[in-house]
Length: 99
Image 1 (cartoon, rainbow, N blue to C red):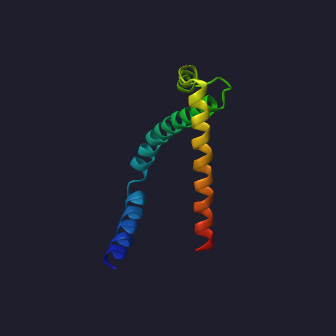
Image 2 (image 1 turned 60 degrees about the vertical axis):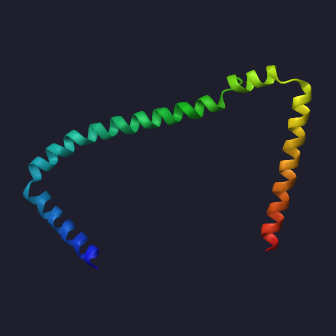
Image 3 (image 1 turned 180 degrees about the vertical axis):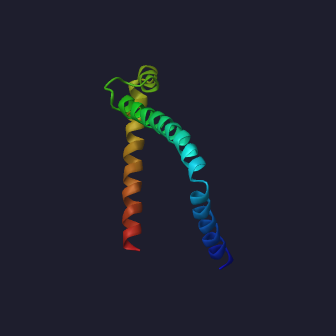
């Protein structure tokens, strides 16, 4: 209850402060908006770059190195373990749904 009343008091004082210092508030807002746009745009560009990079048809360097160093025996063994993991995962899902 104290937090609720404190929040209402802070919101009320903030509203009064905006009206009392409207000129400086607009000045602060005018300086903050370009900064928010710059940072938001940089974040969106970075996330878009990651998405485009993931969709490129070129193989990733780590996968390429693993494919060249691993012989056919390792590929068969890895495939066997993948199938085993899928089988165990499906059994686990069945056990969860039946519970």
